[in-house]
Image 1 (spheres, rainbow over the protein chains, first blue to last red):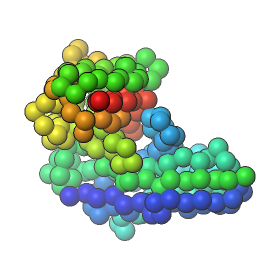
Image 2 (tube, one colour):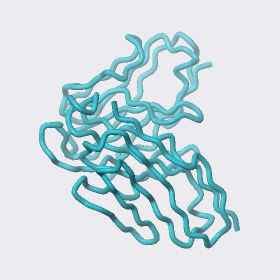
Image 3 (cartoon, helix red, strand yellow):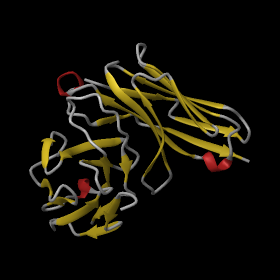
Image 4 (tube, rainbow over the protein chains, first blue to last red):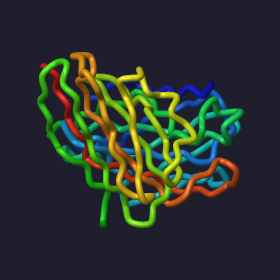
Length: 118
Length: 119
């Protein structure tokens, strides 16, 4: 059964720092991995999607890497800003119903709660 | 539509009443998912639709929960005889296409959710 773990659970940093958020998954047979951002009381905003055949994706100050064989992904945030404060969620999509224990659903980690202070 | 639309955005109901939550996915998206997020918790999968059928409804917590999808578009999640533990944010997501039998890789787009409070 796929399990997704995110470390750290919470992070507080001063503005301007470069950050690394970690995501690990137990079953390397995945279709893709997606990073989301969730603001308090709001839904999820997709940040980056990495296909199973890709190693990384970049969008602005965000860079996500994927090492499928070791079951890890990192989200790198450069030059953090107070507006980056949110919960960041990692989710993997399993490779078929028999191996993932479910049918194509995204399996989420519990998230990393990030606070960037001025 | 341009995004995934959910209604109502907030719902307060009395214990024992039935509620219906609506999700209008992105036009053309054949896959639709319902998730639940309780206070301070991660996202919990409820049910997945491909077209109008539900290949995976394993996450529905009890027989008080049901969902349907019509015309391959709008979906309704119904909770009967609501209990206080049903209080959560119910999130809907859609994806372009999803069968599990091919290696298509499409991301999910989530709606803003319905915050359900059972008093």
